Image (cartoon, rainbow, N blue to C red):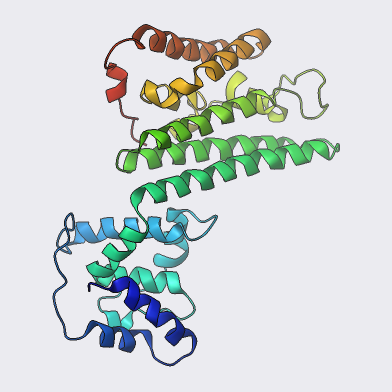
Amino acid sequence: MANVNLHLSQLFPLISGHEASLPSRLNELRGPDIEPPETPGVEPADASNLFARSDALCDMLSTFDHRILPEEFRNNFINRAPAISNLDDCLEPWNLSVTIYRMAMVDVAVFEALRRTVPPHLCANRYMTKQKSRLDEAIDRLDQAEQARTGVPAAIVIDCARSLRIIVHQLCQDRNKRPPLAADQTSYLSTILVDLIRSVCARNRDLRVGDGPRARSRNHNLYTCLIGNPPIEPTAPDYMNDAFVVDRLRVFPSDDWKHLFEDLTNIRDEIVERATEHERASPAYAAILEEMLREYTMHAEEPSSSSSQMRMPGP
């Protein structure tokens, strides 16, 4: 199918005008059954390759929505749709995304056309941008509750902290499963994470009383809940109990975050200066930052740092 993009574009007015069904019109455009030309990097359609293709399609098709993530696209649409084995059954009425997904699963030429239109680097950028928006929204909800001046319920702080941890984990998990990201993408991810630490540090206050004395209880202080004195949940996944963000950032190649050296230094200094006896974890958190900064300074002049070969741990 050498002209897949053109063929698909011809179908849209036909579908909307009910002049032809998608299966019959597509078969007319395809002509007789001809094996599609081999495409470099595409394996035969065995089970494992179909699974990888399905993941890639969810990633690509989710980019056309400003909020939905690949896993949500799968859960909302694909997991509930019946499996399709031929083009005649691909049409999902009123749902172009699922229709294209089915076509691309059945015919590798459709998949390859979509892959050229939505390359991997674009998918990675879209994913990080959506997750950054979700981080911002979680903190905005907390700020709005504080600005209402009616007192911030403990549940809002706890829910915000939990949301931030989950999103950080998803971002890092996504980085691991993708092909190696470009330098500008890894820098962007590091910037998102360091900006998040800075946002949390800026909310080191008792949200019940605004700028007054900080709460000893983590339930009303986002900083305390995530950095200063986070709760320990023995049955929770590791990412719910690690040193917020920095345990992930510390195993990134240092080239990813070296442009944030000054920001990390300022964050470390602020944590040290504002730590109290009730924040048991603040000194350890500052020590992790200090170790990162010291190691980078020691190895900055080396032609190739061993840290540049490090990969993030799996989920």
